[in-house]
Length: 101
Image 1 (cartoon, rainbow, N blue to C red):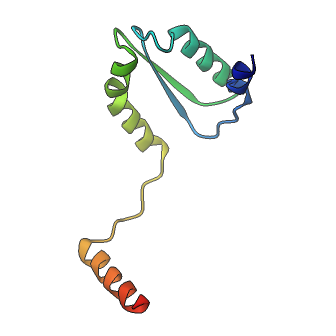
Image 2 (image 1 turned 180 degrees about the vertical axis):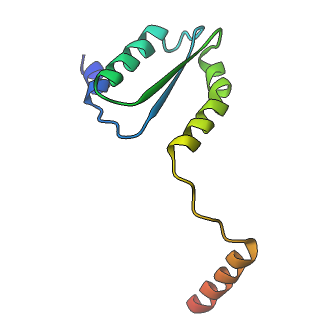
């Protein structure tokens, strides 16, 4: 009972969107468990996307969902700062080493 209480999704107060992926052939995490988690999180006000992959097992669902997960992250997260060029990184590294040396 203590384990169930410690894993109670109602205790979570999510501020970022959450993606749940479930394979219909998953015997490790039954779909009823993911259905209940989705329902509980939505009831607590969380933003949840719940995707079910037909015929996928527990191990198969992650690679099957990878492109959807990446696309969701790109939508949810702000654009990263512009990267410095390799030359700029190299110059900074040399300068930093000179200061430390």
